[in-house]
Length: 614
Image 1: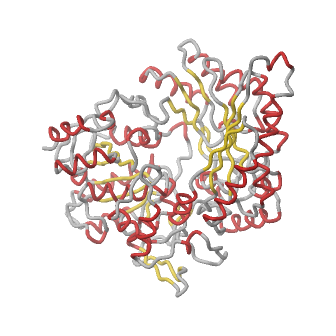
Image 2: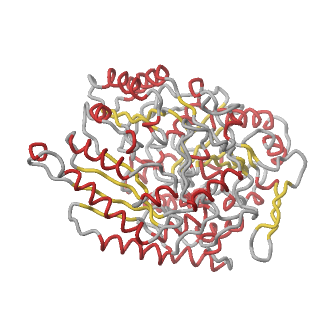
Image 3: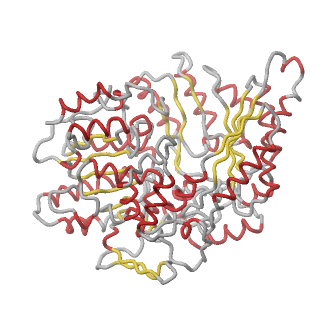
């Protein structure tokens, strides 16, 4: 019905390859009346969404079911949205140009809080009632997963159910339940009452929230029998036996991560106190070398990519990294496929590893010291030293690298001006390490270091979840001070927008009262808030003002340990007592060993039994 009108729009947009579909290895199935349909929505543009490994896994997994059709949906860029509105075209799926409102289940992956406005806008473009209370029989169910589902109360009034944790098993269980419900003739609520019994499924409408006069939460309770007080996340215990697609879609255009992504393990052993991913993905589970090599061979044969990247939170912590890299190089070097190892740590980087990663092409090197002084690195439990970084820098420069990127954060708990200025001083020392090389190794070469500072956002399910964020004025003062202190022309300094980080904190720590703010912001034109092209802070402030909500309440307030938190519905497996202990150790400047050195009894062992690394 809409296909010809949609194709006519392609001639008038900036990047038509975002919308044409029919890529190599994409799946096209004819839907029959007895089949279920799932629209997998990524609330950003195509080139961002097609870089997300989780979407590729679940898309192919659902399509391997004979009773299910899964199609992709991405947020149209402003030019395409305008063309579609002018032509009267609702939001459509990529594979068959089917209106999204006609799918049985519409699922969004929540990777970043600043994509929430795109979720609202995509529902609006799809002509789906925004609020769960407004949906009727025949409307699709709206679900969300991804890391933000663990603290997604701002979307509680818009989303029928959330999936907490890894989706390979639970998504199939939800589809099985839907198939039974679809043939039963029961109402929408019956389906939700069925799936709320599945571990990992959170149905916000089945919980009542009361607030105190000071806007804190008074109570959060189930409003019917059979609903768990807290929802325990789902994990896949054996990664070797989990689903991995044999064939990955190959886009017609360049994407953000235009390569094969080889997921070597999930979780992290390090315990950096600011890092949400390091806690919500515990415990660490690795794939075997044999399984990874086979996956790599299949991906190379099915795609033709010229680069392969090992995907994890800390690649150099993979226990069999040497064997894996050697075996992968055996199948990539002759084919001129570059093997990249992101997420390397400065405390276990070696000349041997460096030589391996530049066998085909010399990629850039990026490290994340996170803080400029050892005192602050101990506070955040980074467990790397200045000596580690300088040793690694010298190895890299001696091996022929000229450029290096260093990532830091501003606004960390207990941070002082001395810590901020230490970032520039550390970058200078890295530059100096280049000049300690013998003259013959430096001849004809220059050196540069790019320093990037993101702004600390206190994330739920971390030891710093009770911390306030620095004010916008304070963060800008620190960034300006650091910029003025960097005199060396061989150092390039970049920093993130403090306005965006403020809103990220608001929605990371927000409750369900923010749902109406999201709807109003969308009506005011807010979308693509992670993009500088679109972000409009004044519109957001207006949306908060409309509803009489002060966003500073969520971002700038220190929270007490006994307060009910908006994200307490989610049980990530790490105990509150452990989080409190880590928070208190941070203020004492005490570090915690990695999980492999010593079990800290965080609680994640409940998913595997015993100590995670016995």
